[in-house]
Amino acid sequence: ELLPQVVMGECVLTVALANDHGSYAVGDLGVGWSADRKGIRLSGTAGFVSDAGIADGVGVVARDDAGRVAAALVETASPGVAIESTPTVDQTRRLGRVTFDVVVDEDHLLLEPGDGLDLADPDIAKGLGFALMVKSLGDLPSEVESAINRLTYRNTILVYVRVAAAALFPDQW
Image (cartoon, rainbow, N blue to C red):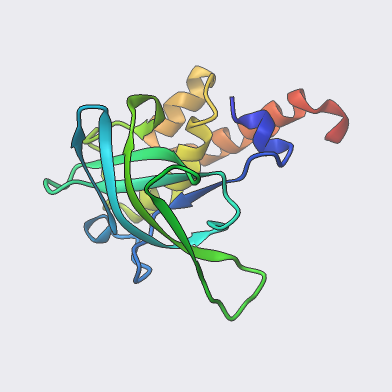
């Protein structure tokens, strides 16, 4: 489980949604996926990835040639993952450009390829990154899993993260 590691600061996760030009539109995703006998192959580049240079893992959203969307959690130390720092005016914001040429097995899929989500809806696209990261924590109550799968009830997901963290580290809350 990743939650204890994330809460303790031992593991940093980020999300790669935008392309090199900053667009979050599904039709403009910079990372594509294709079927591979070991899972899915991710290839392409995501831009404007917060904390890419210090992250241990990246939740990446990709699209295939038919428009089907998939998402996976990729370790930044994996062969085939390259991270390049992006200069910013605000030096407190660490942004990066992440290039993928990596095969991800089924255990690391956060969103099954082509599950039918309407990612053209801007509200769904905005909440997707956070929902995918929470889903990667595993062992979720059914209400939270349901909210994530529908990408709704953002407060349900946030409360779960807060309660789970408080249960893990009662002296910190």
